[in-house]
Structure formats: structure tokens, C-alpha cells
Length: 220
Image (tube, rainbow, N blue to C red; front, side):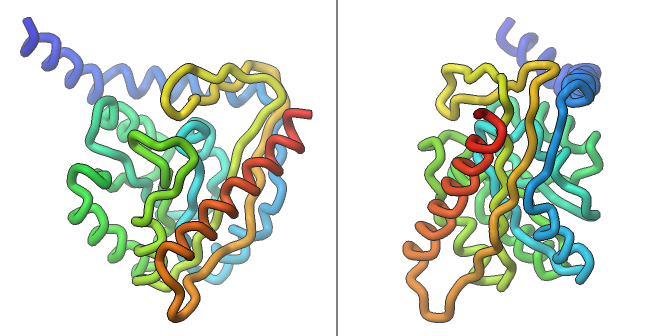
């Protein structure tokens, strides 16, 4: 029975379920009055053909595909749990995927992202995933930015009405017909000679401040 259920889940992950979730997400966000603040920041990179490392908290990842207007983006998605379902939903938004996490497949995923960054592709990372702690940046994104020289650009979503689940990341599900949007933060670069922990903390602080700004704009 266990093997049967596992096989059923795998078939759903690669079949109707991602398509259904994609359509539901599209339908939900068609009802939300969206606004973007700081959209000139990613647009400037796109106009120059320069790839970036886009970071957003795991608990607010659902709407992130709607924030992106560039081409050739790839999103880091873990191989844990429901990662296959998430990966197949993301692909339907025209975004590529890199599979791996800090605890499984991390080295291969890191090397793949390094190559993509050097090819001027945008990379999307939830730096507190896949298991937390919530809203704490792990060092991998700082190492990637140091090695590739790419800018780390924070982006945060918030909305006027939403359900926050009791999961480790307090996953945010916007309510239909609410008011919401994105705030883009200023890009961060690795400073020559900077300690990697200091850079990690700068990224974490910037993403927290960007998230606070998004909440102040859209939840008030």
C-alpha cells in the first residue's frame, strides 16, 4: 500500500495536479489588485542583459512568478517533500528549475547555478528553505554571489488580507479580491575581502527590511 500511494503521488506530481494548481493560482491572482514598487530595479538589470540572484522568503513564494518580467529565469527548488509538484507548477510559468537544497543535492545544484549565473540567467532562491529556520538566510546565496559577482536583489510580497498557515514558514495565502503587490529592494554585492557571514547578514537584513516595507504598504 505504501508503494502504491508513493506511485500515485508521483503520477499526480507529474500530471493533473500541477496543471490544476497553476490554473488556481492564476485565477486567484487575477482577482487581486496588484502594484509593484521599485520595479525599475530589476528592469535596469534586464535592460543590460545582466542576470541577478533574486531572493524572497519561502513563506511568500506563491506569487513570486508574477513579480518576474525577464527571460531565462531558473528557480532553486528542493528535492524534499512536495518539491516535484512545486517544480512542475513553476515550469508552467515559464521558469526553469534547479533541484537541490542544503541537505540533499546541494553541491550539484550550486554548480549548476554558478554556470547559469555566468550565462547571465536570473536565479530565484528562497534562502530560508526548504526547512527553515524561517526568515533566516542560509550562507549558500552569499557564497553564490561572491563566486559569480552577481547582485542579490530582494523582493517581497504582501497583501491586505491573507491566511498565514501554521507551517514552519507561516505560508501566506492571499485572499481573493484583496490588495497586494511587490516591493523590490536595492541590489547587494559582495564586497572584496568581506567575511561571508557579514555578507549573509547584510542579505538577511535587506530582505527583512524589504518585507517590512511590503507589509507597511499593503497590509495597512
